[in-house]
Image (cartoon, rainbow, N blue to C red; front, side, top):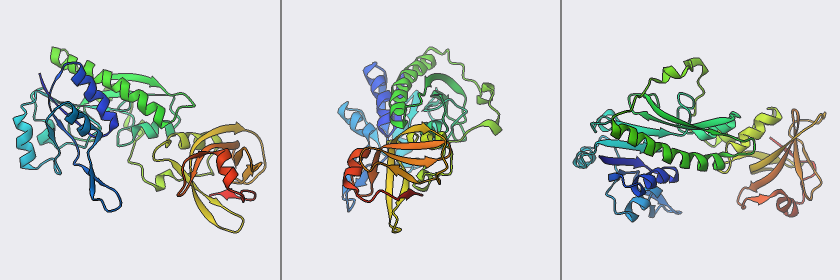
Length: 319
């Protein structure tokens, strides 16, 4: 069976590696065009998937537009029986309908929940205790095709997006191989997502995350704020503004925190600290202890290091 693989980031490399090292016949790879980096954008950086594909001598296609005839002709010439998609772009029908065995996608959530661009982030932000990976056949609509297989993964209260991402990346690679084997054997029985019992009104979306999405709302209770921060750590990172007594505002990213439930009558957002070793934020239901943070223009650091270099923390608040 001839397989064309489509993907771009690190997350997609693991599944491609599993296919290649498993001896599957990957005849080509489709990934995003090289990305300009640097101050003037004069340097082009290949995607992680392209870098791996070139190391293994695989043909690489990098279309700007997925309906471009030159790209479509090159894709047809690969004569794929099956296309595998992991963390790529939304495909037009002319692409996903091309191979005789279809095109399936690996999604980092338990569909039909968390359709969209950022399923891992939103599962952690929402305080889920379980997530997983799903393979499904591509069709019209975002992440709505028939489900082939799922695997589940528990989310610990101390996990952040980084740990869940890594676990799902490896879990997903195994599921990709299982799915290819099922399709190859002719035993695949994909089912409609509606069979999973989630009504449209109960579905939790996973839209793309922007900078303003990442701003912390300190009016929330302790647990939701804690989940919000770990759901954005280490990337793109939750942020807030540290307001000094003189009104000066500093942007602050927060990566790691600890819940400290307690009763208090302090205003929300007030900083409580010994100015040496700990920094707590008063919120509804207790205090959020900041363990790892980053001032704009500085490196990420432990709170003790931050306090050692920041001499005017008393009387500050966050907004």
